[in-house]
Image (tube, rainbow, N blue to C red; front, side, top):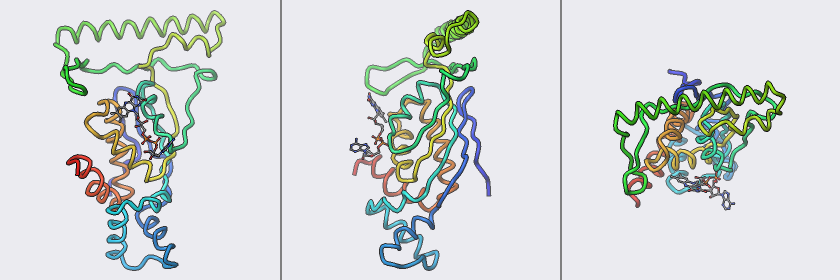
Length: 228
Ligand SMILES: Cc1cc2nc3c(=O)[nH]c(=O)nc-3n(C[C@H](O)[C@H](O)[C@H](O)COP(=O)(O)OP(=O)(O)OC[C@H]3O[C@@H](n4cnc5c(N)ncnc54)[C@H](O)[C@@H]3O)c2cc1C
């Protein structure tokens, strides 16, 4: 079986699974404790798990827990941190000198009139504006370094760094909350960059909890898509 523990995302980022507790059987066991019973045979276990998600009995899924190490641009982290049902610890720009790593999209997008509809920017503009962004990132980082060299504290020097700067954090999340994250962030309205991270998380989720992932697709994602 393929082991997906470390997935590169965007130009400098990654999703890395650090630890995992539980799994499909842990969900079944947690559900059966209500009846004072253990798990029985795999077919019945699988059916029970399916039943739980189909009927939104979601607390048994809280007993499976993922710990990820994430490296992503700050603008992605800001969206990510809105998911409150999880634990976070992030690198601190007060204590660590930030690395010169900025997100530079291959293709800048232009927004169509309707919400959440985008196109690639015209190629000529894309080339020129990406070059200017790269040059701006370089100047920002040079100023950051100069501020540090001239004795400005890290907590003030970082003010000149843009939202495209990469940050890193640990994200510990149970499977129930992870499914909520996936339903919101793999969806087409989510910004493309966080969607790439959500797809990487989804690949790991699928591998670690195949029955749950299948039921999630069937009872939550499909219903969300068709608005039933
Ligand atoms: C496409 C998109 C656009 C967005 N645009 C914006 C925006 O413009 N501005 C903005 O501020 N945010 C925006 N968000 C963020 C969004 O509003 C949520 O904050 C984010 O998706 C986290 O979802 P959540 O609250 O379900 O997750 P979590 O915080 O992980 O919560 C999980 C679940 O726990 C329950 N819960 C958690 N906290 C509470 C609480 N205090 N009270 C009651 N129930 C609670 C809810 O059932 C919730 O669904 C956007 C998100 C998406 C996907």
